[in-house]
Every structure is written in structure tokens, then in C-alpha cells.
Image (cartoon, rainbow, N blue to C red; front, side, top):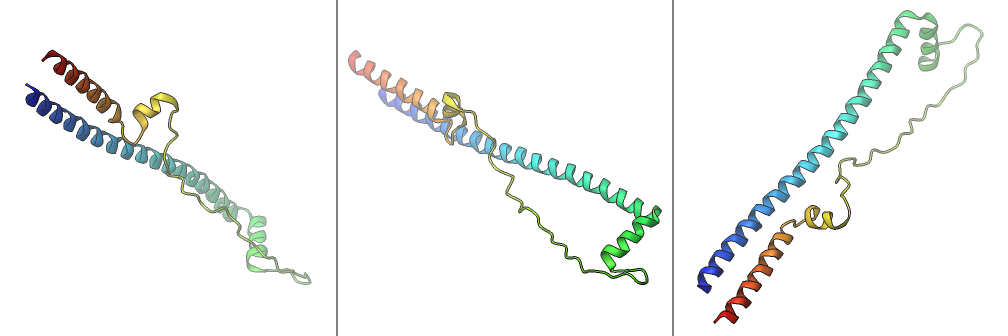
Length: 143
């Protein structure tokens, strides 16, 4: 009887651990993909805004002679007769891009410990161990 119980217990525990590890890996992969999707969506939105700005700038350069003159003076150093020019320095200062893809915020408290941790199988395994100890103790006192 005890041998059969221990064999059943070891099989059930192995199945729970294997299943929990697979579920944990899939959950982490899903979180990573959701974070990547959010970053890429933000990037697409910013590129759309940049595209609209460049379209407006292009339209201004094609249609507006004043804008063409300003561009020629600023970027190519063109001057009218008798004008004195001064060299301008343009500094491209930009913020470095941080790694935006990361782990999403985790909920706190007992729920995070039970279900969001790196080993969510701890709770079912703990329940199985407690049930096993209870059955072993009751089996010992039964005989």
C-alpha cells in the first residue's frame, strides 16, 4: 500500500513540476513579446509623426520660395551680395535610448508570491507535500 502510494505521489509530483515549468516559460515568453510589441507600437507612432513632419517640410520646400531661401542660407551657406555671414555650428544632442523592453510591472503581495514568481509550482508542490505527510502520519497510526 505504501509503495503504491509513494509511486503515485512521485508521478503526480513530476507531472505537476513539468507542467508548471512549461507554463512558467510560456508566461515569461508572452510577457517579453507583449513588452516588445508595446515598444514597437510606440516606435511606429513616433515614426508616423516624423513622417508627417518630413512631408510638411518637403511640401514647404517645394511650394514656398522663402523656405527654399532659408534652407539654402542655413545649410549651404548661400548669401546675397554684400552680406556678411557667420559660421553656425549645429550640435546634435540626443538622449541615448534605454533598453525599453523589460519585465512588466508585477503585482504585489501574496498573489505575486503564489503565481508571479519564478517557480509558480511551489504552492501546488507544497500542498502535495503536506497531503503526503498527513497520509503518511495517518498510515503510521493506522497500523
